[in-house]
Length: 287
Image (cartoon, rainbow, N blue to C red; front, side, top):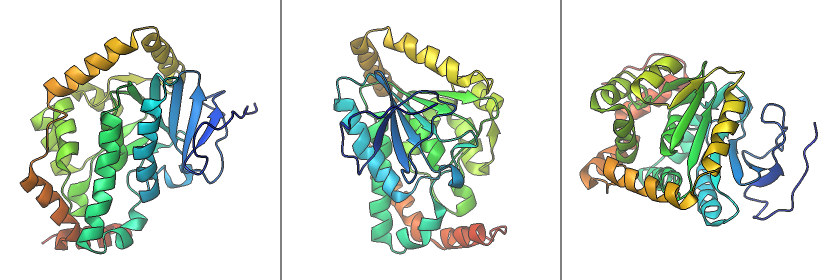
């Protein structure tokens, strides 16, 4: 099945815009780490690095931030869906191969963390509804991106984890606030203390995802749900979203002391050991 190209509405150097024909078989452009796929008033933002389990690199975080602002301002777009290319992973998290360079010094680490924070805040702050459609691994920064979306639909084989404790890092305050808002304090502690992977049924039971669907029906169910949202008032949905985010504490201002602790973890001895252990495929020996 072919792809019908559309006239570019945005900067082609930042992302591709192609017609969405079949979620299971559409071929995405080679070399585009982040692709946009149009389905009428719905835009699918696709993490397009299946060979690397859709790990999110620094350039992709920057594009996500600018892209969401552009989509939010486009009156023809009414719903934004985030997904990973292929069925092995939504995203395995940040591209750890970049860590040695990006986190070489505290100032560069601060800048990169600000880019990631701002990208997720941009997704969270969109007036339009956002939906994460999750197959396979949804870990680390990938899970953080999914949590920044309004709703999460998962395939039955999806699995979830947030693993900074395994790398000697601290989870950021905005990320932690989103997690606590969804699953509560005790379950958030379990996830962050242990860094363990949760299967889809457990993720559903604790409120991390909203629905778990059979892999064979995930795409059609997500499309049906999107159509149901599009039938309702965009203004009502935008107002409800803003109110719920405010009442749940998701949009609270960060605590500077906790932000400083998060930033410091990227130049800590534990992170140096955690990163070395990960790349050497051994157990870390934290001090």
